[in-house]
Length: 180
Length: 431
Image (cartoon, rainbow over all chains, first blue to last red; front, side):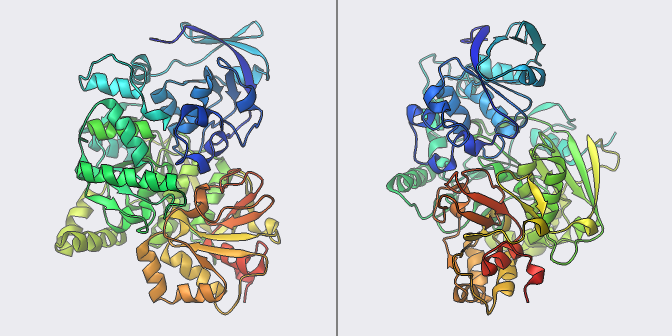
């Protein structure tokens, strides 16, 4: 994948089932915060107050079923991206969240077995060439993304993907609207 | 082989003869909806590098989430949205006070049976009440739709929910939805199109039908569908004829011809048969919509706020149901009742019917038509330690602005009964 390393090694933050958009990024901030650092500072505020302070770039979130259910707000994805989170591995994702992740280039992987095996603080390795997660000397395969989704990720997200589609091929740096 | 509603509707929107579940199509939405997020979406749109949107006539913009603006930042956000609407020549623009996007677009008959509406709002599933395919998308996706007029969509598998029998006294569509979500979980319909069929659905009045696809966002659904019938066609034809200054019967025949129905031999991922007679009054308890309990087990829980409103249950009939229970009584000491009509039309109809006077005399507070405190960005938020009973669709922790507060979800009558008792109450026990 362009611009993405093929192996990710990250420290695990572990959460349960049904984590919704409002505890990932509270609705009260959605029309007043625009800057990436402001948005990142409220990541998981109502789920885990330690997260925004302690999470490090490259860390990985491991969660249960229906991660990101609720609102369509994209900040629930970008708050984690701006925080530097390398990937979210979950048992399943809510559908709008999953699309927002693809469009913003946040790696979202569905792998229930790895979720069950992972503990907070573990170091987990994601091999994007072989589509496996390595943890405690075991490998857990995950399904590859669809060709359509991979096409968007390979172009660097939906905005550059659309630019390419429309023939606006300039390669200058693209600002994606301050992450709103 | 037969096709589901979702397969037929997305084939139509993609200009294909057929589509099947699992297929990815480039679909052209008939309507692209945005609200207070229009300004941030406009910034993403400009980053794509275009000056003009491709589909100004298919766009609808409604200011509803923080209305009137509570802070200068929110006011600026609205000002940017208005400037974009003017610059792009978007005619379907609805100002602060007109109401919640899903109610307004329904009242204006801007979405028709069989059409595809994509909205930068998770409750865009709402339009299933009129037999349209409605799905929520993110902000960047909406910018892409403005730029190209289309979006890739995976044709979802479909779940069939057949509701037999008839809902009992005081039991509403809200209770039916909470029953289903409680039974199968908040991800019970994940990625799927939920089709509702059966006599109990066909017997529902329109304001009750509107609740069902709206609530299916809390079931993980991509969209939901109720088969449109004569009542739906008449509602839309009258309103469309008024807006377009054309004949009702012309509109009626055009609208009814657009309706899409699934084939009898369509393939469903699962079928669930629910007997409406078995459904009791339900309540979703903190902090998840699938934490559903029978009302009888939660009765007596103290509430400091009762909130009647939102795209789920802020319609005339919902306000009427509350007024009927509350008439001649008073909101309990230590509890406040907040009423926010879903639209200006609802507000005016409630005024004419005398419900507004009834409720204000009983101690209710009215807010500007809009989303109100539902997502914690506007007035009516909670204090630490408080509990609110609400007609909304979400009770997530922190949803109403305060993580240390409890939100219970129920039907309008339950909210009204709880307001006058100060504790969660069964409206059938109020004389």
